[in-house]
Amino acid sequence: MIGTDDVIGWVVNTIKQTGVVDQVLETESVGAAAPGTFAAVIHPQAMIPSPKTSGLATTSMVITVGAQLTIQTPVTPLTPTDRRLTRGVDKLLELLNANIEGSDDPLGFTDLYGIEGTALSAVFGWIPGPDGVMYRSAEITIPVIVTNAYSQSQ
Amino acid sequence: MAKINGIKQELVVNGLQIGASITQISRGSVDVNLGENTGLDKGALERIALLASGGLEVGCWFDPTGAHLAFQTAAVDDVIASYLFAGGAGNPAATMVGAQATYNTNRGADASLTGTASFQSSNGEPLRWGKQLTAGLEALTGAHTTPSVDSNAATNGGYWVAHCTALTGTDVTVDLEMSSSGGGPFASYGGTSLTFTGVGAQIVEIPDVTVMDQFVRAAIAGTFTNATVMVGYAHG
Image 1 (tube, rainbow over the protein chains, first blue to last red):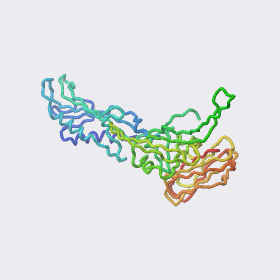
Image 2 (tube, chains in turn green, brown):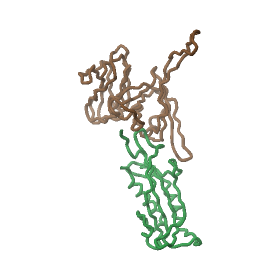
Image 3 (tube, rainbow over the protein chains, first blue to last red):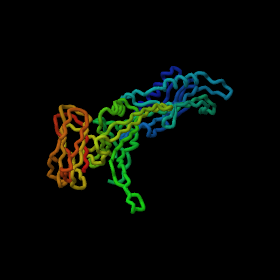
Image 4 (cartoon, rainbow over the protein chains, first blue to last red):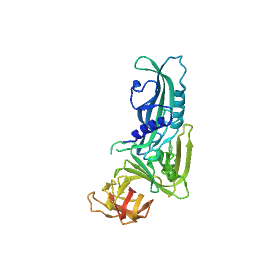
């Protein structure tokens, strides 16, 4: 077992530290957040090995967490962008430029530039709500390299 | 042993276990210089083996408590480096006494922080392959005798090496024992035994006049509550 709970917990806490997001949910449901709120939904995306940081007998892992930041207010393409969204993403990216402090200090670090192929990034767009309306949203991809996550055996 | 891959390996340098920060062994070489001594009556080159050498080149991820600790004070004294395979008694191990030639670090544009280090053999012997008598680095809480390892045949000479990567206590002593039978009886090979009072590595060259039996093992004792030790052997 590696620190997946630590990584996801760190992402959740970091989003809360932005001070902009109203709710942080670990659910896949877009409609789970209250109408009008600025909500973040966390979902793990991938766990892949990191050859570049693995040792001779240890495997480092890239844990990629997705964070979907959505303002739960219906919009159209002509609706001006709610600045809470850009400010939230801006602040979140600032806070994610960090090492992760775990029981093994540090547990790992954000793969900012994509050493293993996936960089820290944000993509803006719309997502459909449960009733067919569109919400403004940003998808944040957060790759975290957990060093020496597994000991190898043979 | 069947074909194996590079999973679960280890590198120990002067008693420092640094495999977790070593990302690749880019060269573990036994180099034999060849001289040409072609006779006039030959239609193709004849060659003869001259002086041998050995080399070890590794890549690492920067780790202040790992590879960096081992490599940062480069090249003043020779180092004893052992490259272990899969941590099982009888599995291959290569050992070299070498002078450190390089330690280069690189901060990449992608924020990767890597390094390379290289060593050249320096004691008149190349990098030499042998077998592990311990199962890689073994964490011990008391006296321990390793399983018998078959060196394939009785031979003259060779070397044996030990690394102590951790010690809580006064000392660890290691002796090499041998027997003509895998089931024993075993007795000390009669040469130098090794004593550690802290982290470190020692290697013993076994003279060619010493006949080594086919089966060998390590006898580890001393006054300690915890000791982590690796012992390797290669026949001549």
